[in-house]
Image (tube, rainbow, N blue to C red; front, side, top):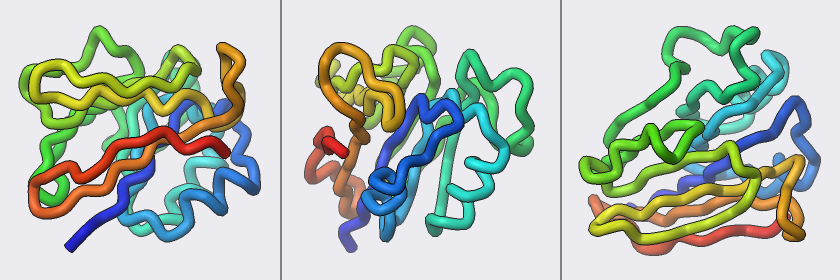
Length: 151
């Protein structure tokens, strides 16, 4: 069964109506850090069926629960993921998909067999592009597509 994974980062305490509408219906939401709001975290948890996240450099003060740490590695629908706020902390060689944030600039690149995706910032983008998220479509251990979505 095809699953939709939406990827966000660097929301910094601001969940826009466009963001919430765009992620509606995703099967998994990944947040690559700098949530900076416990109420936003609660809203995201209530809005999607499943969420995975990591801490960003501005999240040191907040409590999102024990499952949200600096690195998150997991398998979802047969695809191995690693998530970290920082690109340099990702175990790229051991992952099918590696997700990072921090730069507020959207980018997808292939490193060996790994798809490395930075969704940019859904709230405070840099580099001239507007707010963005990442989106993956996966099925039975295969990444069917990886793209950046403009909000």
